Amino acid sequence: MPIAYVGIGSNLGDRHGHLKHAMRGIEALGTIVAGSPMYETAPVGGPDQGPFLNAVAALDTDLSPYALLHEVLGIERETGRVRRERWGPRTLDLDILWYDGKTIDEDGLTIPHPGIRDRRFVLAPLADVVPGLADSDGPYADALGQVADQTIQRISGPYDTQEQRWMVGIEAATVLTGDGGTFQVDTPADWENPTGDMFGAFLSAVVLRAVGEVAVGHQPSSLTYRFVHGVPQGAQIEVVPVKVRGSGRSADYVVSLLVDGREMGRASVSTVTESRAVTIAPEMPGVVPLSRCTPVDELFAPVGRLTGASMRSWRPLERWDIPDLVDGTSGVFRAWSPNLTLGTEDRFLRAAAILMPIDALIWTSTMHQLGFLGSRKVVVTPTLEFSGRFPDLEHDPGWHLSEVHIEHMTDRSVSGTIRVWSEDGSYLSVGASHNLVISGENLLEIV
Image (cartoon, rainbow, N blue to C red):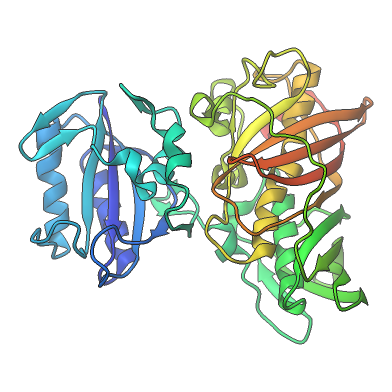
């Protein structure tokens, strides 16, 4: 059946409820095969409006474009939408952005939607769902840099088509309770690995948020996390940050993560009061654009490999036919990944988003080095320790590019260096990861 991409927006009343209503209505018109995260965005219309919530749904449907238009307008009316003012406030706005590659330009229906490239609130969720979507002018995702100045904030994970709900974003998932220097956080299922333990970068995000609570006026400059035991999904973590050194310009903290009184991991975090300018840094390499890559969970699907909820929440983009995204010979592995904290002013959370590829991509690089990438052969690489250093965290326009170099490898362990840039070429971090390497015939069941 044809695939249609539908833009969803609301800035009146119960915005979350209106978007949920829209997804239920759209699901009745076919099958939702993918859904973007929710984004909060500034209104395009007049000044007397509140911010919008926006998302994009990919719909597999046998309805014609005109029949689909009729149905989505009906879904709008169910929320009380009355189309009077162009670009005015609205309870629900549904637009057919693209339909099976067709071009239609008639009264009441223009496909592809003419405003896609001008609106970040459309481009960002569309690139999350289908980064390679294009029209006669080329891939839509390649236009993201042209709208980087438009205000937007990601506030959820992607839409889970099986459970018919939006997954919990990293910001909401790491909210801490408690005070007096000891905090608690629950471990949501949306951030677990296929093994049932929590994603390591999720644990680092918890650490950074705890330091952010006690290091008011500071920003992170480095983090090193040492894994002692895996933290199972469903556990409540006790987070204990302790200041071990401080001055007027910097401070160091040790943070322990405990479950039922047992230490599961420990981190060292350094903070500073002012950004440190980078004087020497590698330039961003010339790479294949994100529009030519594929979400990693889709790459895994043909070989029957499970990705885990954390991978679906994060959803980096990779391309295995040329793993280094340049010439396929250097052994470097590069991948694009979304900034899960896009739009937040919290620099500790921004650092947490940068740690995602530092923690995770050593696995794909190891698989590439062994010649297993894209096959049914598999190893797992449990993390023993990883670290990241951060320069200026003032801004971050959206997607990250990470580059992995394997520095040392034996039959039981692997160490690598990971560099991260923002999509505008800004250098964001250098990190290192030390991991075990475990292989076996039965590991395919848990990876």
